[in-house]
Every structure is written in structure tokens, then in C-alpha cells.
Length: 330
Figure 1: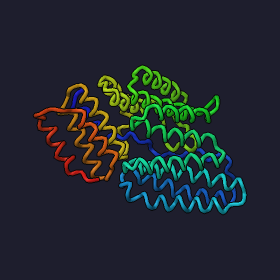
Figure 2: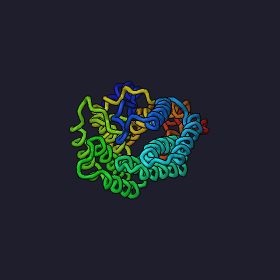
Figure 3: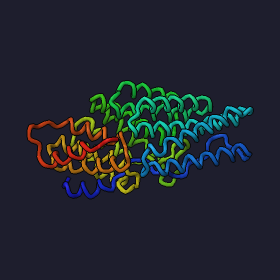
Figure 4: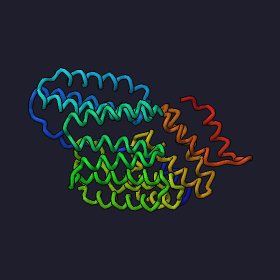
């Protein structure tokens, strides 16, 4: 792969799921409480749309206030069905709060809010939602290198899906499993999981809206973006290079922070291949986004990349990268 091609394409990269219209929450009916839930969910969607280009620290307080409102309303509901619907919404908001905390590199708070999301999902009596929240926590643990915890959470998530899970759910969990195996250093199990993910998404129709609580399209291009991440974790540049063409379908999104994270994955692949200039040029672009969006997760990931290379006399591209990191106070 030519460096110029990679730099041009990756500069537009966005691995984050685009928000799309989803199927309605199961059990919804035309009533005042459901209208209330719909209005509250609309606010949640608005926050999600802002997240890709807005510092998480700016969104965190409003989202937590929104979560408290949903939790208060749920506590005041006498009807069990209405209370379950609000619990489901509370789970969705808590999961988003966890995502924001993860972006701020506040891992303790992220785990707390993911735990809140799982508990609320169980109160909602929606097993698909429980699977989604367990899978979301598994994804964070896998990316942080906690392979066994991630795999355990994925098994728990699958136990809530039943024998015929939605294709999106099956594909996403298999791709997340691949990241966990990659974090544990097992390339064969990671490859097997990616194959299962690719097989699952073949069943997803192009016009099919993802089932709630998924708010994103998970397709073959998305699987390839997970392959890039696995290649970065495993130090296998051939994986990141091979997945580049397949992942181009997700290279035109507008989610700045996720674009930066994928840039860092590509940079890891180039570093493993010995292409130092290309690796740290990509990484510098990612750091610039991380500083602009005040993302602790991006900066931490960039520091990890830098630790992977040691030399008493680093080339200019790396010295420039160090200068950017030295000014990073997130």
C-alpha cells in the first residue's frame, strides 16, 4: 500500500457507527408514556450525534443530568410495562455516559456506567438489550487489553441472544470477540472470529434497519475496520494493509474521534512494518484530532504507540510527534 494513498484515505476515516433509523423498541404502544419515552430518546439521539465532534467533557454533565431525569421518571412509574420502557431508555443513556467516560480515559467511571446500563437492561426485561450492554463493556475491556474479561463478557452476552440472534448482533459480538483474542495475542482465534463476523453480516440486508438497541449499521466494511484494529494489537502489518481496501466503506464518516483511533491503528501497522515516517505522520494527525476534541482515549492510545518504538536517535517524524505529545494536557 502506498503511503500517499493511506494518508489521503485515512484522513477521512471514521470507524464509529453512523446513527441510523432503527426499529422501534419492542413492546412500544401508542400512549402518553410511550410518547414521553420517544421524546426522551430523541434527546439521547441528539447527544449521540454531537459526540463525534464535541469534547466528551462538554457532553458528560448534560448526559448525566438526562440520565437522572430518566431514572427519576422510571422510579415514579407504577405500571410495570411503563417502568420497563423507561428502564430500557435509562440503560441506553447510561451506556452512552460510559462511552463518554471511556473517551475521557476515565475507565473507573466507564465501568460504573456500563454496570448501571446492564442492571437497567435487566430491569427492562429485554434480553437483547442486556446482550448489547454486556457486549459494549466487553468491547472496552478488549481494547484495554483485558482479553479474558472481554471474552467472559461476550459469552454472557451471547447467552442472552437465543439460538437465532439478529445478524447485526451476531456479527458485532464476533468482531468484538476478535479484538479480545487479538488483545490476548491469539491471531488464529481472532481470525476465526472475524470470519464468523463476516459470515453473519452477509445476512444483513442493505436496506434493513438495525434492531434496537443497535443504532449503527454493521456491515462487511465495518468488519474490516475491526480487522485493522486486530492487526494493530497483534503487530501484524499484513492484516492492517489487507483490510485497508475493504474498510474504505467506513472512511468517509464525520466522527472525528473514531477517525483518529483508526488512524492510530493504521499507524501501528506501519510501525510494525518498519515504516517509521508514515506511522508517525498518521499518529501526529490523530494526536491533533485528540487535542482538538480533548479525547484522553486518543492521547493515551498515541502514547502507547510511542512506547512501542525506542531508539537513542529517533528520526525527525518521531521527534515532531514527541513535541505534539509533550504539549498534550488532556
